[in-house]
Each structure stands twice: as C-alpha cells, then as structure tokens.
Image (tube, rainbow, N blue to C red; front, top):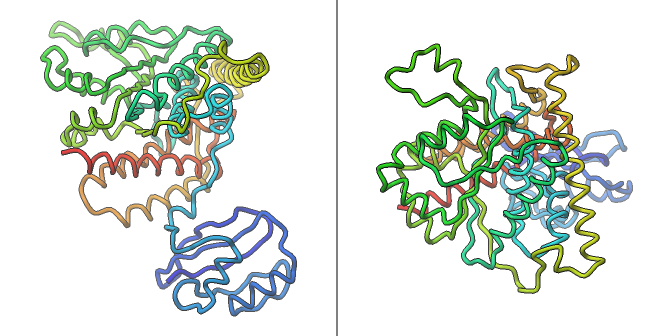
Length: 436
C-alpha cells in the first residue's frame, strides 16, 4: 500500500517523501499550476478526506488497491501510479538546463542522432572543461570530475562518430577561447606509454577517444605488452595524481617529487554485438567496467541529416554557428572563472582545485534514493553496480554544478545527478546480464 498526502500549488509535480511508521511509502503531490478551489474540493471528495482551505494539509489517504476511486485520482493527476517506482518519484522528467542547452546546440546541426549519445557527451564535454580545476568534496573524500564513457550503436548510421566529432569540436573551440591547450591525446598506447604521456600533460586534463572498442579489449586481454592496461585505467579513474612508473632504483623521494596532477577522460565507441561478445564478467569483478557510463543508440528514422555546418543552407548554418558560439562562449567563461578561482582567496581551494560541496538537503535526498535502491539489491554484481552508482551521483552532480557556475550541489542539481546516475546504473546491469 502507498499512502499519499500534501497538496500545494507551488512546487514539483510529484515526490517521494519517505515511509510512514508502518513501512508504507509516502508520496507528496504538488502542482506547478494554480488549482481552483472547486477542483480541490473535488479532489478531497475523491480522497475521502476534507479540504478546509488553501494553506491546510489534506489528510492522509490510501492510494493503491484500497481506494475504490483510484481511476479518478489517476485521471486528476494524469499519472498512472502503477507504473511508478518509488525511485522514479524523486527524479525530474526533464533534462538539466545545461544538458538541454548542449542537446539544443548539437541538434541545431544534426537533429536526428540519438539523444542518449548527446546526454552522455554533454557530461563528458563539461567534465573535460572543468575537471582540471574542480573536484567534489563529500564525506571528507575528494572525487575527481572525470568520466569513462562507452557509446554503442548497431550501425554507422547511429551517428556515433559524428556525435563525438561534434563534441570534440566544442572542446577545441572552448579551449581556444579559454586560451588553454587542446587536451585530446592518442588512444594508441601501452600502460607505460600512457603513464609517460600523462606525466607531460601541462594543464591538468587529458581525454582520449577509442573507436572499435572490441578491438581494444581483445588486445588488452590477449597481448602481453598490454598487460596492466586495465589496472592502470582503473587507477586513473579515481586518482588524478600521475606518478612516474616505479623501477627498482626509484626512491620514494623521487617518486613523490616526479608526479603530475591530471584527470583522464576516456571515450570508447563500438557496436553492441562485437563489444559484448568480447567482454567478460571478470572485468566487472575487477571494478573496471563498472567505471563506464554506457549509452546505446538506434539509427535515426531518416537519412536526411546535416553532418557539417558547411553543408547547410545559409540560414540554418547561421543558427548552428550561433548556437555553437553561445555554448562555447559560456563554457570558456566558466572555465576561466574556475581556473582563476584557484588563486582567489574568496574561494576555498584545497589541493590546488576548487571543491564542490553538497548541501545537507541534497545529501538527504541522495541517501533516501540510495536506501530505496539498496532495498532491491540481490545478486553480488548489483551490489558492485550500486557502489558505482553512488560515486556516479557525486561525479555527475559535481559536473552539473560546475557547468551551472555553482560550487554547491543543491537538492535540484542532486536530483538531476540521481536521474542520470540511475539510468546508467540500470544500463550497466543490463550489460552485465547480457555478457557471459
């Protein structure tokens, strides 16, 4: 049974408020539109309770099964509660404003490519812009803003390459405007070669793109010279301090002195069948694959799409150029703001970076969702995915805060972080269950 109460005319459409003393889920209904008093009286009648004025609270009532007028209630709110999980009630239906802005920008040039790609690339783009200067500090732990991403599509017409190329173009434009070094590095490496390369990165961020992900994993699993690749990438995900590869003659003093602080972003692309036939569950057991955010896309319904601004008619090209300039101007300004903030006394700076913190209310909401999700865990692999879900909430929320010009993750930003992290959690569970 689900109990529901509280109706106002100010806030979110629907939210999960907790549990009552008998363990029943409690839902709060709120609406963004002004409901006439006559409608409130009608609702009170449906709920078999009493409405006594604008500021009063409707009495608690039973929503599911035991209320004979459930259909009327569903019609009133326009929601089928049977299709909702408690977690869904926490999550916003729309995209975060920054993610929406990124999607609008990209769709000004190629409107038919999968939105799942664009959401993930929006996070990767912001991460690449801000990970060198900021990190999240929650529960006395520092969490870098870097992302490992996997974009999969059944055919070349899903637009994987073009979507990534567009994001790469935005990165280049942003870094040029922010007078910074373009951060893309080669994805053809050995573990030691990658270590040496990261030691030379001057501006604290590196990102790589690897196509044909199945080929990469075949090499990692089969070639002796690639031994240690998974371990290296696993470590780089949470530790942005890159140290020189140790040798028997390397002293601890030299190791501590010879280091560089770099956040690494990785993006792999491929087809689901080829990649999933290559992956093994043991790679989840090591924690490596749990670090990736997966996005699957279907081919668009039409082949009539733009791939380059130069191919557009003048008016469409002008609109796309304006969108690109608007977004990159904003992101470059934020990038310079956070870079300069590292030297300003008005910002609290730790370890050379600006910390992003989380408000108590945001932490409370995250803990409630985590508790509800934990109730559903059964298999061991879901526990591992759950641990990564909690970390992804922090990372994604921090990225959204940075892209919003904020150093605090408030409840609103946290709910978007939960929305995206929960989606990637469900996807990684599906991937695990697909492979052998």
